[in-house]
Image (cartoon, rainbow, N blue to C red; front, side):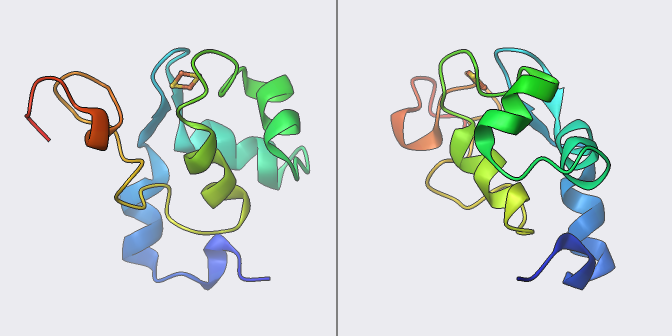
Length: 95
Ligand code: FES
């Protein structure tokens, strides 16, 4: 399985401090720490360690992408920087 270490350094840096869970203000670096240092392998384990994903649940696809060693943002489930909703459900059109 590919990990984030297999990714180009620039890609890793871009996603390192991305806010993943808006409900609980959990960043990608906190989730990566749960994965790398606490061996979280599932969304439930990441949620237990960080609280990310335990609110509205809209960040769970991004958590799963980080677990898979991929960049957090995949397009369709990316969050709008204006309203914080999933871009496809964006209310403010800032996305
Ligand atoms: S954004 Fe993570 S649970 Fe709502």
